[in-house]
Length: 281
Length: 281
Image (cartoon, rainbow over all chains, first blue to last red; front, side, top):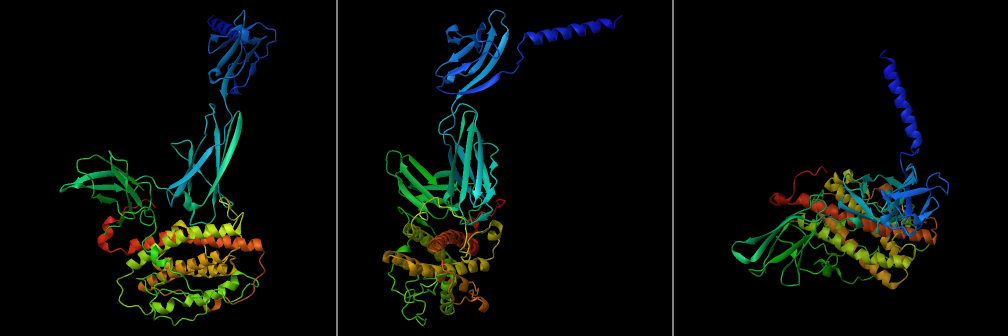
């Protein structure tokens, strides 16, 4: 006696599910659509007839009927604010007919690409960005050529617009060519740069720049710093430093060039004045 | 000992001394590493043959690398003779520093020379993105080297490679000088050749101070005069392009080579300033 009861429950549940599915629109997942900023777009209400009676909503808010062309929603001069979830409902039954997730954006402009070696001679990295935003997702593809050889550019673990290349050979006369292509749903673009190995060498700034007064002499300042920690081999590839300083009240800098060492004593400071001191590697 | 210098921008202090006019056809090699400035030759020292004068021979027929290489044999022997006369050195340290300084000076000088020469060759050679495949110019000494191999070079090999490279490059450069069209170009090239000869002498001095023999060409490999295949004008220009490129790259590399040597030669007291941690490098 107990058996037919649960069986009946299942049947009822199944039937309800079928009816539910039939009554609701077949799409659970909204249709994703990308449109260009400033353009006009017409959104049809799925497979509904042109003269069907429907209501449109965006993000849950009703839209005025004067935007409709029959059952289709017409949007002129798309702005970023037009992005959202558009849904059309059967006017009387509020049955959901169709959903569109609209993204308003732009095709990509030519990307800006630059490469730099702050870890010479280990390798170099390239980073890129778009000069103006597209407001929609973009994918980038980077290729590195050394002569005819393709080199691997490993994605940076932290920064999404950067990748790293290891030098295989040093002192090469053959240029490197780095190309990047960017694409999104509305278009694509690309650029490339070519350079010699030595032209992109640029170390990170020196670290831990500290200025200490010299006890016996109020006109002296002892400035010390460290080689940037990213520079792998300062012995074979020594760094030169430029130091400049001025009292805050003056505009004129004093420059010092240091081909060796990580310390310098300023001897012509004005006692009692606040100084700004900068060191470049 | 402080290397601090207050200066605006570069010229190295030794630069002034090297700007001496060149008497046509006379090559001077500096035997004294302490001077290492090729043009302050003490007057009593001339038992050298005046043979390798760049101009008088008319070698236009079938200009080729092999043809010019015959001059190399004479140049090989030039620095060897005086180097044997030296006595009582303070050690190789100061001469390594001078050699390093010379490479930096030459690098600087080459920048303007190459710019002028490439403009003379015309497009595409003077275009910044010009990136041809490396074909031909096989006899040019190549600076490129595997990173680990370069790091593990012993001092003798390091010096030898530099010496041999510049000997060859100088020879080819003199060939270039013969073909150069304008008097101004010939002057600049001649000046550069002289400086390069000075660098060779300086390297020879360092090698002698360290007790390394100067590389002599093996009897079997001495190139003999032979008219090569006639180069097209374009191919000749390509060869010139690669010559300048290799020169540039070798000078970039040599600075690093000599810096490595300099650090190795430093007396133990100064070792305190060398970071001895391994950078995993």
